[in-house]
Amino acid sequence: MADVESVIQAAVGGVAVTQVLKEEKRFDVTVRLSRPYRKDIEAIRSIPVDSPDGSHIPLSQLATIELKIGNSYIFREANSRYIPVKFSVRGRDIGSSVDEAKRLIATRLPLPSGYRIRWYGEYKEMKEAQHRLALLLPIAFGMIFLLLYWAYRSVKYALVQMLSVPVAVTGGVWALLLTGHHLSISASLGFLSLFGIAIQDGMILINFVTNLRREGLSMRDALIQGGNLRVRPVLMTALLA
Image (cartoon, rainbow, N blue to C red; front, side, top):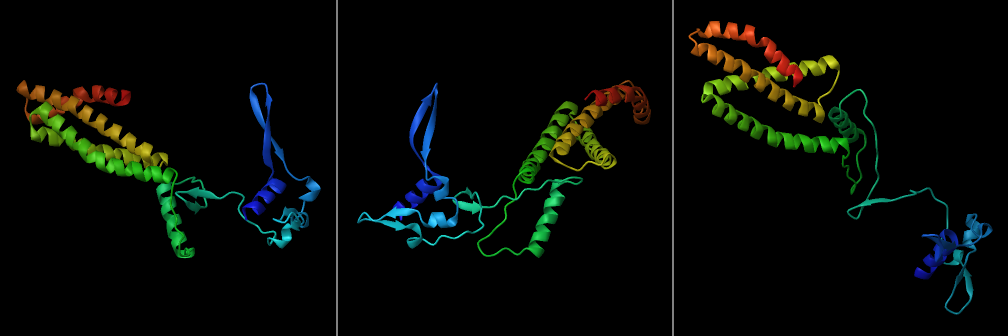
Protein backbone atom coordinates (compact mmCIF):
# COMPACT_ATOMS: atom_id res chain seq x y z
CA MET A 1 0.00 0.00 0.00
CA ALA A 2 2.85 2.37 0.82
CA ASP A 3 4.40 1.76 -2.63
CA VAL A 4 1.08 2.50 -4.35
CA GLU A 5 0.63 5.72 -2.37
CA SER A 6 4.17 6.85 -3.18
CA VAL A 7 3.61 6.15 -6.88
CA ILE A 8 0.38 8.19 -6.89
CA GLN A 9 2.01 11.01 -4.98
CA ALA A 10 4.99 11.12 -7.34
CA ALA A 11 2.93 10.76 -10.52
CA VAL A 12 0.13 13.24 -9.73
CA GLY A 13 1.31 15.49 -6.92
CA GLY A 14 5.03 15.34 -7.54
CA VAL A 15 7.97 14.82 -5.21
CA ALA A 16 11.00 17.01 -4.50
CA VAL A 17 14.10 15.18 -5.72
CA THR A 18 16.71 17.87 -5.13
CA GLN A 19 17.20 21.56 -4.52
CA VAL A 20 18.76 24.41 -6.44
CA LEU A 21 20.48 27.34 -4.81
CA LYS A 22 19.84 30.83 -6.14
CA GLU A 23 21.68 33.54 -4.25
CA GLU A 24 20.69 32.85 -0.63
CA LYS A 25 17.45 30.98 -1.33
CA ARG A 26 16.86 27.27 -1.89
CA PHE A 27 14.16 26.00 -4.25
CA ASP A 28 12.83 22.44 -4.49
CA VAL A 29 13.01 20.65 -7.84
CA THR A 30 9.77 18.68 -8.16
CA VAL A 31 9.29 15.79 -10.56
CA ARG A 32 5.95 14.33 -11.69
CA LEU A 33 4.33 12.85 -14.80
CA SER A 34 3.69 15.06 -17.78
CA ARG A 35 0.18 16.48 -18.06
CA PRO A 36 -1.06 14.04 -20.78
CA TYR A 37 -0.38 11.14 -18.37
CA ARG A 38 -2.37 12.62 -15.47
CA LYS A 39 -4.90 14.92 -17.09
CA ASP A 40 -8.02 12.78 -16.51
CA ILE A 41 -9.24 9.75 -14.62
CA GLU A 42 -8.42 7.33 -17.45
CA ALA A 43 -4.83 8.53 -17.56
CA ILE A 44 -4.54 8.11 -13.78
CA ARG A 45 -5.95 4.56 -14.03
CA SER A 46 -3.19 3.72 -16.51
CA ILE A 47 -0.33 4.85 -14.25
CA PRO A 48 2.06 1.87 -14.04
CA VAL A 49 3.00 0.48 -10.64
CA ASP A 50 6.03 -1.77 -10.22
CA SER A 51 5.31 -5.28 -8.92
CA PRO A 52 7.77 -7.41 -6.91
CA ASP A 53 8.63 -9.51 -10.00
CA GLY A 54 9.58 -6.40 -11.99
CA SER A 55 6.46 -6.18 -14.16
CA HIS A 56 4.25 -3.12 -14.44
CA ILE A 57 0.63 -3.22 -13.29
CA PRO A 58 -1.90 -0.50 -14.14
CA LEU A 59 -3.11 1.39 -11.12
CA SER A 60 -6.71 0.46 -11.96
CA GLN A 61 -5.97 -3.19 -11.04
CA LEU A 62 -4.82 -2.20 -7.56
CA ALA A 63 -7.30 0.51 -6.60
CA THR A 64 -10.79 1.75 -7.39
CA ILE A 65 -10.45 5.18 -8.93
CA GLU A 66 -13.49 7.43 -9.29
CA LEU A 67 -14.38 11.11 -9.19
CA LYS A 68 -16.14 12.41 -6.09
CA ILE A 69 -16.78 15.82 -4.59
CA GLY A 70 -14.95 16.27 -1.31
CA ASN A 71 -13.24 18.77 0.91
CA SER A 72 -10.12 20.38 -0.43
CA TYR A 73 -8.82 20.77 3.10
CA ILE A 74 -9.59 18.91 6.33
CA PHE A 75 -9.43 20.98 9.51
CA ARG A 76 -8.30 19.22 12.68
CA GLU A 77 -8.08 20.23 16.30
CA ALA A 78 -7.19 17.89 19.19
CA ASN A 79 -7.18 14.96 16.71
CA SER A 80 -10.80 15.66 15.75
CA ARG A 81 -12.07 16.86 12.39
CA TYR A 82 -14.14 20.00 12.28
CA ILE A 83 -15.86 22.19 9.70
CA PRO A 84 -15.61 25.96 10.34
CA VAL A 85 -18.75 28.00 9.68
CA LYS A 86 -18.36 31.77 9.87
CA PHE A 87 -20.92 34.58 9.89
CA SER A 88 -21.02 38.26 10.74
CA VAL A 89 -23.54 40.16 12.84
CA ARG A 90 -24.93 43.56 11.89
CA GLY A 91 -27.55 45.69 13.56
CA ARG A 92 -27.74 43.62 16.76
CA ASP A 93 -25.59 42.27 19.53
CA ILE A 94 -23.60 39.06 19.23
CA GLY A 95 -25.10 37.40 22.29
CA SER A 96 -28.74 37.46 21.13
CA SER A 97 -27.70 36.52 17.58
CA VAL A 98 -25.87 33.40 18.73
CA ASP A 99 -28.68 32.50 21.14
CA GLU A 100 -31.18 32.66 18.27
CA ALA A 101 -28.84 30.62 16.06
CA LYS A 102 -28.58 27.97 18.79
CA ARG A 103 -32.37 27.80 19.09
CA LEU A 104 -32.89 27.48 15.33
CA ILE A 105 -30.20 24.80 15.00
CA ALA A 106 -31.66 22.83 17.90
CA THR A 107 -35.15 22.84 16.34
CA ARG A 108 -34.35 22.56 12.62
CA LEU A 109 -31.00 20.76 12.44
CA PRO A 110 -30.76 17.74 14.73
CA LEU A 111 -27.15 16.57 14.80
CA PRO A 112 -26.24 12.94 14.08
CA SER A 113 -24.52 10.89 16.72
CA GLY A 114 -20.89 11.87 17.19
CA TYR A 115 -21.35 15.47 16.01
CA ARG A 116 -21.30 18.56 18.19
CA ILE A 117 -21.25 22.32 17.79
CA ARG A 118 -18.79 24.68 19.46
CA TRP A 119 -19.12 28.47 19.33
CA TYR A 120 -15.88 30.44 19.05
CA GLY A 121 -14.73 33.85 17.91
CA GLU A 122 -16.07 37.03 19.47
CA TYR A 123 -18.91 35.13 21.15
CA LYS A 124 -16.52 32.91 23.09
CA GLU A 125 -14.35 35.89 24.01
CA MET A 126 -17.46 37.76 25.19
CA LYS A 127 -18.56 34.84 27.38
CA GLU A 128 -15.09 34.54 28.89
CA ALA A 129 -15.00 38.27 29.57
CA GLN A 130 -18.47 38.16 31.15
CA HIS A 131 -17.34 35.33 33.38
CA ARG A 132 -14.30 37.31 34.49
CA LEU A 133 -16.44 40.40 35.11
CA ALA A 134 -18.89 38.35 37.17
CA LEU A 135 -15.98 37.37 39.41
CA LEU A 136 -14.24 40.73 39.51
CA LEU A 137 -17.22 43.08 39.96
CA PRO A 138 -18.16 41.93 43.50
CA ILE A 139 -14.50 42.15 44.49
CA ALA A 140 -14.22 45.64 42.99
CA PHE A 141 -17.38 46.88 44.73
CA GLY A 142 -16.18 45.41 48.02
CA MET A 143 -12.84 47.19 47.70
CA ILE A 144 -14.57 50.45 46.77
CA PHE A 145 -16.80 50.18 49.83
CA LEU A 146 -13.79 49.56 52.08
CA LEU A 147 -11.97 52.57 50.60
CA LEU A 148 -15.05 54.77 51.12
CA TYR A 149 -15.40 53.58 54.68
CA TRP A 150 -11.73 54.30 55.27
CA ALA A 151 -12.14 57.79 53.78
CA TYR A 152 -15.37 58.73 55.63
CA ARG A 153 -15.01 56.59 58.76
CA SER A 154 -18.75 56.05 58.43
CA VAL A 155 -20.79 53.15 57.11
CA LYS A 156 -23.70 55.52 56.43
CA TYR A 157 -21.70 57.82 54.17
CA ALA A 158 -20.11 54.87 52.39
CA LEU A 159 -23.54 53.33 51.67
CA VAL A 160 -24.92 56.69 50.51
CA GLN A 161 -21.95 57.01 48.19
CA MET A 162 -22.52 53.51 46.78
CA LEU A 163 -26.14 54.44 45.96
CA SER A 164 -24.83 56.67 43.17
CA VAL A 165 -23.81 53.54 41.22
CA PRO A 166 -27.39 52.36 40.38
CA VAL A 167 -28.23 55.88 39.23
CA ALA A 168 -25.18 55.86 36.97
CA VAL A 169 -26.25 52.48 35.58
CA THR A 170 -29.68 53.89 34.72
CA GLY A 171 -28.12 56.78 32.82
CA GLY A 172 -25.75 54.43 31.02
CA VAL A 173 -28.60 52.15 29.90
CA TRP A 174 -30.56 55.12 28.58
CA ALA A 175 -27.46 56.32 26.72
CA LEU A 176 -27.14 52.91 25.02
CA LEU A 177 -30.81 52.93 24.05
CA LEU A 178 -30.69 56.46 22.65
CA THR A 179 -27.52 55.85 20.63
CA GLY A 180 -28.68 52.46 19.33
CA HIS A 181 -25.72 50.56 20.73
CA HIS A 182 -25.85 47.14 22.33
CA LEU A 183 -24.33 45.95 25.57
CA SER A 184 -20.91 44.59 24.71
CA ILE A 185 -17.58 44.06 26.41
CA SER A 186 -16.45 47.58 25.55
CA ALA A 187 -19.75 48.95 26.89
CA SER A 188 -19.27 46.94 30.10
CA LEU A 189 -15.82 48.45 30.54
CA GLY A 190 -17.40 51.84 29.96
CA PHE A 191 -19.86 51.11 32.76
CA LEU A 192 -16.95 50.36 35.09
CA SER A 193 -15.42 53.72 34.24
CA LEU A 194 -18.81 55.33 34.80
CA PHE A 195 -19.00 53.78 38.27
CA GLY A 196 -15.65 55.30 39.16
CA ILE A 197 -16.68 58.73 37.87
CA ALA A 198 -19.97 58.61 39.81
CA ILE A 199 -18.20 57.72 43.03
CA GLN A 200 -15.57 60.39 42.45
CA ASP A 201 -18.22 63.06 41.86
CA GLY A 202 -20.13 61.89 44.92
CA MET A 203 -17.02 62.23 47.07
CA ILE A 204 -16.57 65.82 45.91
CA LEU A 205 -20.16 66.68 46.88
CA ILE A 206 -20.19 64.77 50.18
CA ASN A 207 -16.92 66.29 51.35
CA PHE A 208 -18.22 69.78 50.63
CA VAL A 209 -21.53 69.11 52.41
CA THR A 210 -19.66 67.67 55.39
CA ASN A 211 -17.55 70.82 55.66
CA LEU A 212 -20.70 72.97 55.56
CA ARG A 213 -22.19 70.88 58.35
CA ARG A 214 -19.09 71.50 60.44
CA GLU A 215 -19.61 75.24 59.94
CA GLY A 216 -23.01 74.93 61.63
CA LEU A 217 -25.45 74.62 58.72
CA SER A 218 -28.38 72.25 59.00
CA MET A 219 -28.45 69.13 56.84
CA ARG A 220 -31.09 70.60 54.53
CA ASP A 221 -29.27 73.92 54.06
CA ALA A 222 -25.93 72.14 53.61
CA LEU A 223 -27.38 69.90 50.90
CA ILE A 224 -29.01 72.83 49.05
CA GLN A 225 -25.94 75.05 49.25
CA GLY A 226 -23.58 72.17 48.42
CA GLY A 227 -25.63 71.22 45.38
CA ASN A 228 -25.69 74.79 44.14
CA LEU A 229 -21.99 75.46 44.66
CA ARG A 230 -20.56 72.09 43.63
CA VAL A 231 -22.64 71.35 40.53
CA ARG A 232 -20.12 73.07 38.23
CA PRO A 233 -17.00 71.32 39.63
CA VAL A 234 -18.83 67.97 39.57
CA LEU A 235 -19.89 68.44 35.94
CA MET A 236 -16.39 69.56 34.92
CA THR A 237 -14.85 66.53 36.64
CA ALA A 238 -17.33 64.19 34.96
CA LEU A 239 -16.82 65.71 31.51
CA LEU A 240 -13.04 65.64 31.79
CA ALA A 241 -13.08 62.03 32.99
